[in-house]
Length: 396
Image 1 (tube, rainbow, N blue to C red):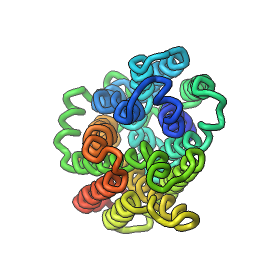
Image 2 (image 1 turned 60 degrees about the vertical axis):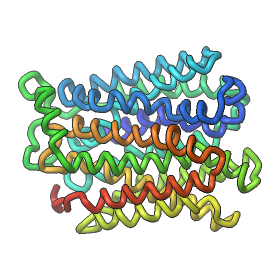
Image 3 (image 1 turned 120 degrees about the vertical axis):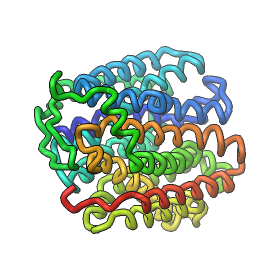
Image 4 (image 1 turned 45 degrees about the vertical axis):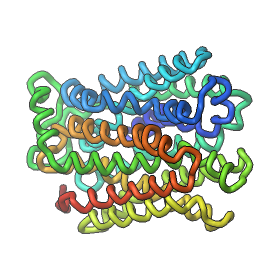
């Protein structure tokens, strides 16, 4: 049930974000924004994560994931209801910022949640299934947004979905009193009572001192920089460079989300078959970089679809496996997993927001070929970070 709850809850804020991309041609004139403004709006839900991810991890380690994520889900629901009634860019941007609160808390604590119910390499598979909610939201948002009669109609529908997700989490998720995981040398009881919860300073010290957490965070930052570059501007790039129709470009871009969904489910299973996952992750990173740079330029038809599918599969696959690693590290374990995950998530979202919006877009503007080549090159950073991670034990 924990996996189902995480899947649904993480679907909601990501769906609210990714539904915007196919609607760009309606939203940009309706709210009077330019390309940089739309890129900022698209990534606004991640701004919260950059600032709050470390804090959210600490709060989840201290007070428990159910309590803190329940509060976060309420804030996201409020933001999505308010979004229905706004009429100016600043208000819409503020609503999208608050929408990201739930994703912030879930991303920071997902390794801790799954580490409480699963052990060893099964944690990665559980994280993959849970994170596939994000990938499913991309697929649904990118492929169905244009079917709604208006922007306001899809905003209303999303608010209803958010209400369902919040209720499911509050009613359906149960926090185990003791971790069933044997992960790490410091793995201890994870009951969130007053006597068992670690102090804030203890959590911060354990997370900050871990070299591996910084490597994971940097790899995730490169991963999301590439992914967000694809998801933000791919429909517009296909129209401007390839000459596709607007509706067709959205459908083609949704192939990336199908690949992402498959990658989040299958990559952890494939990774579990390798005695050393580092090389598997490095290979996926290189393929993701090549796909980001050149996949969208392949000939129309099967080559284009296959290239975009593989790009989504590899990018999402690397991210999912990386997110499960903190709880398996000996110096972190389930006790500090949310705090460590919060630091990594903050770096991940910083890459997602800063690189496409404030570095690549100003540098390359409407030159989509150069834009995506630069985004693809960033994936090489991800490959190097993966190779520098430690080899995990079979039972860790």
